Length: 256
Image (cartoon, rainbow, N blue to C red; front, top):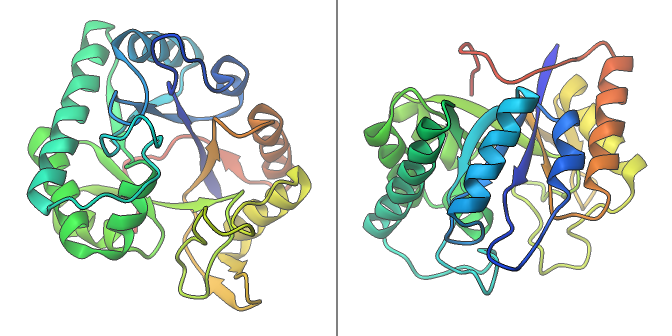
């Protein structure tokens, strides 16, 4: 068995500093870099790309809704056409910075509300997948396991990587419990590690109502802005190693 550990990074901008990127990088295998709309700025993007190169982790674009004040976690009324443009713009921006640094962008993972909206709304998922395919069809699409994002990526001819979350609770239909719910987050490192290990080794997770949810966990997300993100990442690496699970970035043979 193998799994990727991905982390959302590069979410500082201007005078605002967020996340312990330097502490997390040694423990993950791919990162998703904010592209300036929900967080990040050109200088932070450049520095994060450079750090990724040093640590040998896969680089991904993390496009979000244009909502700095809400960190991209508030739903907005956007059309599929607008989503297409938002994604194409942000992916193109990171590709430009990566190229200038001699690096390569390998994947795209939508951020926050854009991610959760596209997971259940096929037109938005299709717009994201089409934008990625039109900008660079070699890019992989990270999306919630079993969601419209994975289906849209496959329909667009993209390589897809099914994602699961160590620190988020699930509904019985496989969707994430929204952050507005007090029970949405798993704050215990031990519990988050146990959930991630179970998802990878058994392909299941317990929903918030106790139901068993079947999923594909090709990559596990760690939130870089979460307290103790580096500790969680380190615990996950240790747990996967102990279970005989190889931790590395997705290969070209990943599946839905």
